[in-house]
Length: 89
Image (cartoon, rainbow, N blue to C red; front, side, top):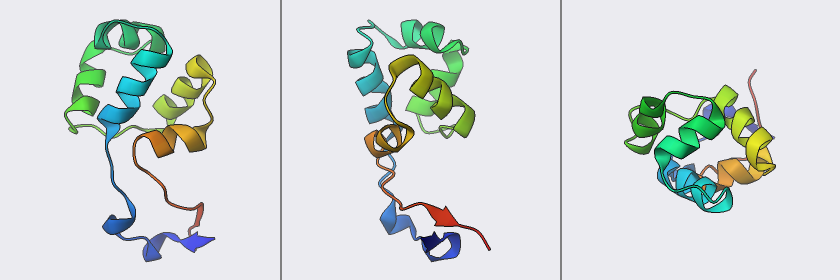
């Protein structure tokens, strides 16, 4: 397991728009408004995530997993987060 302090920004190629686009396609939705409705979140949240003003938080990641049945690991990979599991301490 990697230590949180050993992870660099080079290990992360954060692209949340890829995750959102994959969910739209998988769930056969037309737009971000439909996705926000399906995830039970406000539409501006999707917009802020897409424009990188808001990170994809753990609660939203879990909700995406519940709706799409994609594993958390695969959801993280879709947005470019390929970090190994990490240990703080």
